[in-house]
Length: 384
Ligand code: SF4
Image (tube, rainbow, N blue to C red):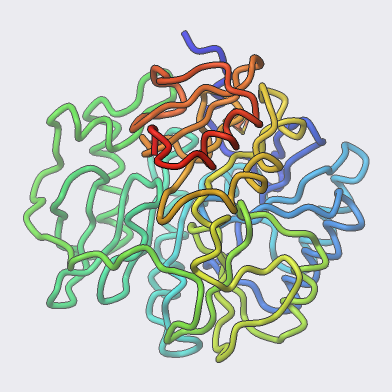
């Protein structure tokens, strides 16, 4: 029994989720990209119908915060005019697809055709859990390996496409993408992957249950990308994956196609220099990028303490290459996996957890923000 609420589904635009600062409206950019006009419309809609705060989710979606019951219908109308809204909730909730941001523009973008094929196939999938997702990671080497999905489309070193179930090192050769993806989803359901409407592929694989014909290894994955210039454009970061509407307006005014990524960064396609815009981080050495912090109090109703203000205070004192996960409660939304160093708000200060998740047994408990700062500033801090 957990102390926090597990929803088992992701918010959408048509089915927003209530949070401490209003409705969270999640936009799933079609094929993982936004035109400058679409990005500008999202920024305008955030200011007009929300509180002007926009999150970038770990599934490469954009979330508008602070929307109300009254402002939701006109918001949807504005976004629908930009081609950003699915026809209905069912279609929207099925479209759990992350597309690699690193791919050519225009006719050379074979990934876009694959994304169209896979998107069309989603409506023919068996009934899958709400968080079940797909990654189309079809560059020469996978780059989305850190993203939380269930079925991956990747390439072998010889360029062949494979379908790899999350948690297994090998995948099946792809003969016909739509049919093969549907078959793997059907296998997942038939093999007992779903219990009470929930379940993830990695958990099924961990039970030793593996789909047939998984014989091909993907090419070696690329390391997690850093902010800076890449062959496809400029990758810019946002502290905690959050920006003000004005930042997105300024980015859209640069005129580049914008591709949200699961690394809480945006790719400005074709940009040859890093933009200087308030709220945009372009230095990979910026210590704030070494802190993962969830929404926390007051915007998350389950939070037992602040996260992001504290993260900003701690960042300049974080030594060397030290990373930190700051969680508003033991649910650990922002980093469900173990982290080297985690601070979890408890309502009685913060617990410090070493090499564990936000819910693991702490090494120190009840730390005040000042005690944490003092600890970080101490020479040879014993827990770092
Ligand atoms: S981990 Fe953070 S965002 Fe998730 S429920 Fe707890 S406080 Fe809210």
